[in-house]
Image (cartoon, rainbow, N blue to C red; front, side, top):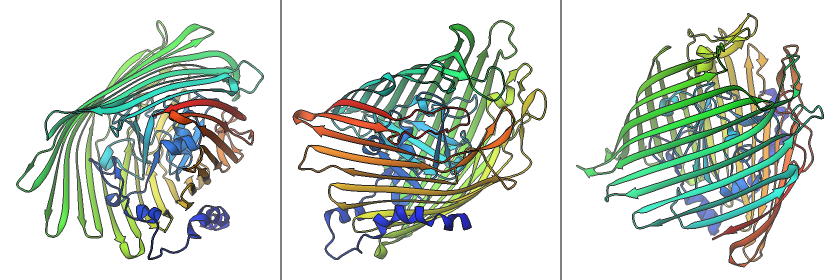
Length: 637
């Protein structure tokens, strides 16, 4: 706890704009009234969308303005502002980009895009370089162990990304931009409704020459990507409707590798290209009978992820991953004994297939299938200021131990104080990935089919406070991870094993925002984390992260300005040349944006990334881009 006290200045810097706001007066302003009454719906707060006041876990919601404020091409740039989140990118834009929630591993957070789980079970993680920010309307981040609700992977939490068309509002947007590193991007998004049909679609492209990730003076590692998404809803009757979403992504990028195995990157002519296709179709039936509101939902989703690696233009290896997932769930909501009740039952089935090919006769050639099935329920009770949640899930796995997870949560609304206390305790699991179970690369790595799922147990408690012109949320959490899967390089060939020791994580998360005047908004967050294995700090987990942003958008002027700064504290990593632990320096990324609006929805803007030209590494040995400046044109209607 001592290290958190020593960093109290960081906490005060973030909270001061909020806590210095005067107490709520009798004649509250319009802003105050909105903050006190606003109760947004959280899609992933339960198995069905529920008001945020009924969610007993820590949750953060980002909208399109938040994504713009942090100025990046990719959606993950905005996630740096979320407490409990740390981001690592292995080099320039388009490189492998991972996210850790509350000190968990990079493959310990479940990601959903328009209701679809996009990653396939090679390593079990999701590469955030595959999601551009343009066309993203909303991101929900639900922190803490959530496997009882959402199944394996949800140890650190769940991230739900929603694209254009979710709201059904009429909207048209076109964007074009160019700037540093010979970067160019363009996009078009449209949404709306007509009669019983609503939805939207987004098309986006991005290209950059990048930088030399090896930092040896070699060729730049470029990247290009195109993506199209679509969402829709068709009302068949007053109680029956179809929902659907689809997404296709195509990318190609260069990368460097350690070809002489000395632990340092070499400038190499390696390239990777691939495409991802995903689709989901659901049917929702919402009748009411005997004083009970019913909601029945059935959905199927398909994901295909294919990649190809070349060396100097010559085929090196390829992989194909597929996931088929389907579920049926039924929810009943009713009033009894002075309380509102909600009960959901779920049946789910999933099949994952992975095909690896390294050329004729290669040892890595194989095709594997993994099947899982699950039963789950979720119960919620609301009585006056009290909310209670109870969830449980049973996963039946084909190759390893079956798992039962559960979570309990509660909250109490102190309306006289405009505050709420919440807390919960739960479990999360992470199943071994196909690479860990069956991976085979001669003389380097063999899989271990005897692995068991990783299991985390944790609790958190938090307070949410609304002020006259702002709000603040404070959360303390602790968790313990058992049977962690790691690569054992002490044997030859290396293999995957479960650790016999435990990993302990604890921390403090604070976020708040304040609007000292109607046209000015300040937002800040800070996180303090302690994550260790047998008393040794775990790699790539900063003990401190912080973010602050300010945006000024006067209604009576055509100009708008925003500035943001995201700080990442020092952290450890591994030098794979000596297998020694190294320390990476802290850094702060500053970004800014200025725009000018013309009539008829036309806007020109300039924006900057890494404005202080920080030299930093997210991953040891991988160079990161310096200052970048960009100019763009946007049309919105």
